[in-house]
Amino acid sequence: MESVILAVHMVVAITLIGLILIQQGKGADAGAAFGGGGGGSGASSTVFGSQGSGNFLSKTTAVLATTFFVTSLFLSYLSGKVSSDKAEAVEISNRVEAIQAPAEDKPALPVSTESTDIPAIPAE
Image (cartoon, rainbow, N blue to C red; front, side, top):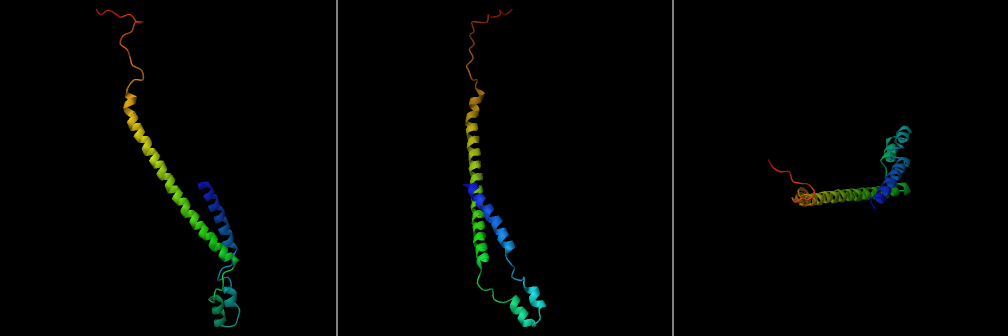
């Protein structure tokens, strides 16, 4: 699931960059407005005039930016969840090792003191 969200996140990011680069900025006509005659009032109304309704590109950019924000939050949530799960798994494995540690000190097979194969050496 994390890889699907990451793929969506990357596609949204690349599309968002493309849409932002395609759009014309608010002050793109500022040079023409100040350079073309007609006085100060016409230039200021052109530069600082009403925005008007948002067009298709600006609305699409807003939707993609919201999607990018949501996927960023969801990926950070999943990342925190995975790291806490890993920390819990390490803690459990440490507990298991602590419980099994005394068992490792004992020999695997019991050693018998009586052996009939090897003759005893007489003490002098």
